[in-house]
Length: 336
Image (tube, rainbow, N blue to C red):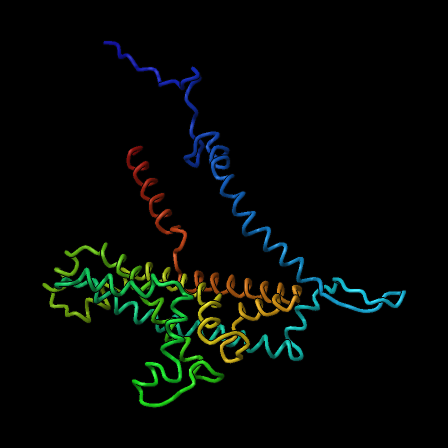
């Protein structure tokens, strides 16, 4: 008895089907992917790569004025190399830079830590089943939905000398003046606004945890704290790390909230972004670009260190490797 083998399907142009490469990709798939991604890469190059290269180039120049060979006043930019960067560590400019760097680091560590703890508590509260849970979720997300400038004006009104804050504590504190109270005002306003962001992302991670896991833990006698430490936190760790990473990158670029709430030129709350803005506002574009480049490198180092040290799988490479291993094992079983 003869067996008839069906011919492999052909492509619309009549050619035989393309053979997959050893890596699992079909010939020409890479070129098609590059063609489809080219518009996105072009936009990213225009809005990210070009401004970054332009700022790096501008940081090598300095606006100077003097007398030319004819005795007339001449103004223009002159190439100074890395002088704008070395000036960040000496003199008055260096003191101001170190102060802004310290404020940026302090605000980032303090606000992100408080937001993580408060956001986790909010997520735990929103994840419980009770009457009015939808209203609670909506009310918690309201601060995050308010624009930062509007939030700054709101808290500026609260922290006035005769505002609600001083009325509640029964004293008169100049919250928007120089000093640690200005830092405290920025921290309170920032945590109030952005803690719901972490709470929302952590809540999304909690929603995908199967209820059967908690039921099995309760049957085994695990209490609420044991379930939190052994089930909830380990399973929401990837989501929590990504949320903290986003907040770190955002806090390092803090500008609008202290600018609106406290005002420019205040040393106690001046950040690197505010310092770069002030330099550009004074038409010192070379030093402003140097501040911007330093801030960019600071953010990049923090992001890379966070991903490497804490193992935040932002790109999903672990899941991809797991799927590839599963596919390889299935192929091996099929062959055997």
